[in-house]
Image 1 (cartoon, helix red, strand yellow):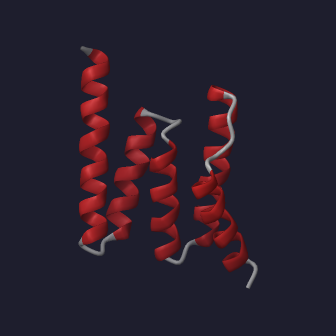
Image 2 (cartoon, rainbow, N blue to C red):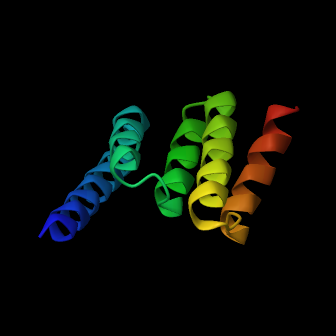
Length: 99
């Protein structure tokens, strides 16, 4: 029952965040993604979406910090590295940050 509620909560939070993104409100979307990550701190897609929100908001530093948090959590909890899609987004953000 607990896992079912947790999963439902994450799904609803992700849906809400995507709706905020479609509405052009990346600040609200980022808040939703942050709250969802409090529930599941190894959900890589949430990190990736949050990084994209911060990038659109022009906050490259927060986007890079989000990647670092993702990388550390995945390594500590699951013993894995971020996916190629997440790494590609990070590389883009790192290059944008150094311009």
